[in-house]
Image 1: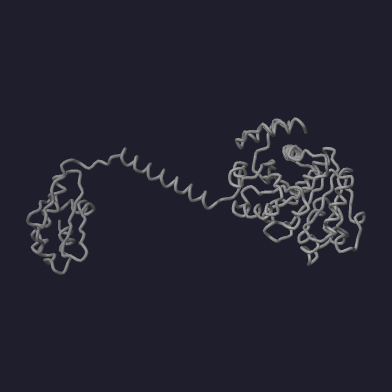
Image 2: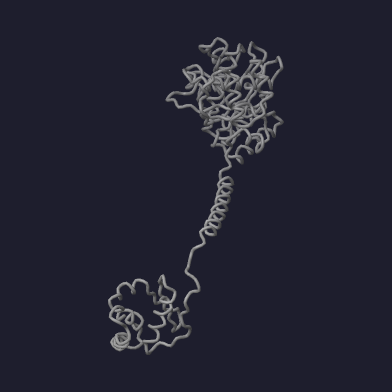
Length: 391
């Protein structure tokens, strides 16, 4: 026990190591000296902070030996005074596995619930149709799935079947919510850029034209036009030239591959875009188109929160199709944009949830796709079913 005595006697105010070693050597047997290395691994000596007290502990499978060793070391050291002798444990230590598991499970469950709550509070993006109905309190028109493609997801190009079927379902909802026989002007808007507003406007105009309606698509985003790129038409002369008096309507209107779809591109990016969109020429253009051969006028507007251009355009539209990027649009931003739109008493036709991550259905019939989407999001699709029958 020589090294054990040295560990305890190592303090300045304790007896010297040779004296303690001599006492320990006199009392210990030869077998104890042979087991010194083993005993040292289970001996702990701890000095209590700001005191002159030492705690000597020894771990052993024998409770008697666990108490005997600290008491023996303290007794053989002349400079140590025993304040509280070590007592044998009444029973061997045995961890309560069930209690540990119970408390660990409760702590883990509590932390998991708190973490989920915090993440939901931080991430307030619109993800599902329930978010549209519950958090924004506006009608829901339909969802558009995201697809993996290197090209623009335009219906005039090869796209997956479930993508085109989603737009046909969207067409049914739009027609059902606007049953009048007069020309209807729909403004395609979004809260911020990058949510797929222009793509939605182009595909919405196309799918209406595929259904037999005569459609005019107008690119009114004079700050960042994109309709001409998606439809692969020229942008040499367009809306900007018409509004400044440099062109006539027939000069700006272009036909597409679909005979029922005509388009007026932006034509440029003038610096006075708000003044042009609020001008009398813009109102005359819409009035002339409404009294012309068209059944639908779809207007691609700038993002609502980026500028005031979209709010200006609400004065010439019959309703707004509000495009939301799934897992992109924050609820507070969407609510602010909707508030700005409805300030002019303009009706929100409904929301289009764009770029939704869903699996392509194996069944390709329109009713099967609508049924899967309703089941996926838990929507009561009675009205939607009627729309699908009519389309």
